[in-house]
Image (tube, rainbow, N blue to C red; front, side, top):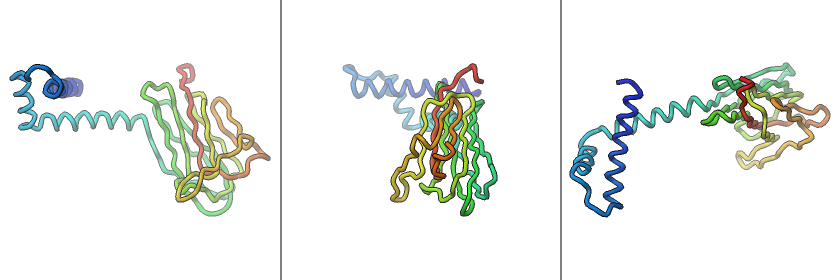
Length: 202
């Protein structure tokens, strides 16, 4: 059986089951023999369970296509590195150079709204604070125009509190967020961008 027919069949199963339960709980007249026999069938067959698993799998697969979280290492040494992740035609990249310490594990999460009107990107140090000194950074989203940005030098993890970067420390463009030389204090632990997509930019 192909996917559309399976979805339709399961939908019918749930509709019939819902109608039966609704009338049983709220209806003013007795449940019909047909509805009663359907309910009995649900109890004695795995149809409802199979359909539930099938529909949940479809929903989970659809959600996975619209969100993605990946690990990456932020490497010191003063060399410029770039890490990127994408969903469909929408992409987020993080370009940076840092000094001090050793490699730190970071995460990048990208997401696309159901109607594909907004694309989001977050990158952060899971431990709540980075001990590297960022000499430069540029975060960029492609396929969307930035509407909202939050940036932190420290986040509330493990007893720490949120410490937001001052607005003077970075600049926000239509598609990029970059450090302001001479103002940026070299501390970054989390950055989030939310952008509105445009078909003209695809």
